[in-house]
Image 1 (tube, helix red, strand yellow):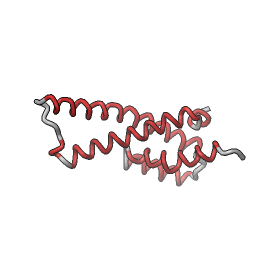
Image 2 (tube, one colour):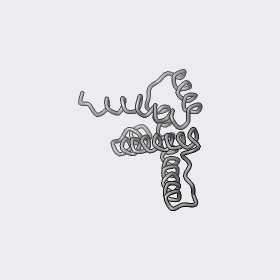
Image 3 (tube, helix red, strand yellow):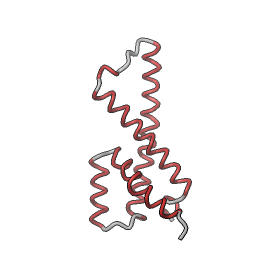
Image 4 (tube, rainbow, N blue to C red):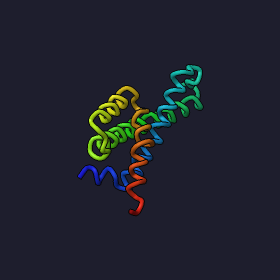
Length: 121
């Protein structure tokens, strides 16, 4: 049941949207973290608008990151066909590199297995 749902075209579109938003939110957080001068002044109107933009990106990014994580974990466990050792290694990679690990898994493994599934035999 889960495998057909996770591999559907609609799920693939949702996961692709989630992967790009998670990546955007991660880059935004990275910019704010490593470049403290990029933090806007919240006492001015442009600063409030920039803060609002960062807040929206962070909110959507956190929700899409959770959605992508659940989807990629279901794909890893139910669909991927990896050995137990490979599954444990991918799971450790997810945990150690959140949220980028699930994005990498989406583009490297899920995208490849989904494109193979759509090709006629």
